[in-house]
Length: 173
Image 1: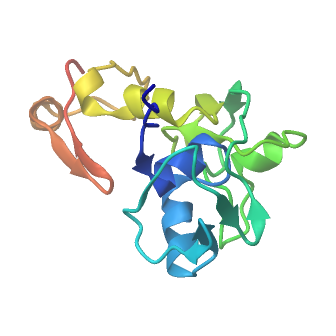
Image 2: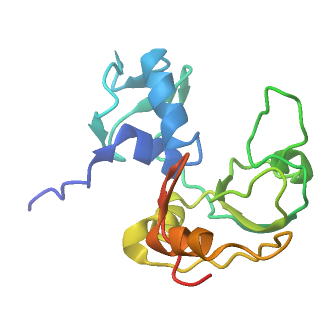
């Protein structure tokens, strides 16, 4: 009889999948030496693990835990930040989620002055599929402008613009 080999994934993906923290936050925890695998402190963010490994975060055993996937929709009003903590102490979407005990994160974001629907989940695989450009999921935005936009401005949007978080190209304006 052969023993089945468990799939190995990067530790940040594994712990994010358990709802421990986001991938970026897990990478930070690795730098802070807060994670142990099979009795050894993790020192590299690219370490691959499986459900067979004994994983501790801050001394607490977390491997083997199963989390129930959670999906929430929130209408984000204007003047609310799409972040967990704001250094300027402005209101955040997580304050609006109030009683949600599980770690969830927004799929995408809306600017401070924007309002609209946000999806929150602890399902990292779904969030990645929805946000990754290869999925070609169309997003629609309604924007009001004062006056008539110049043709050059519209063409610039259609050709693509560099935003603070990457390149954005519009199919129609």
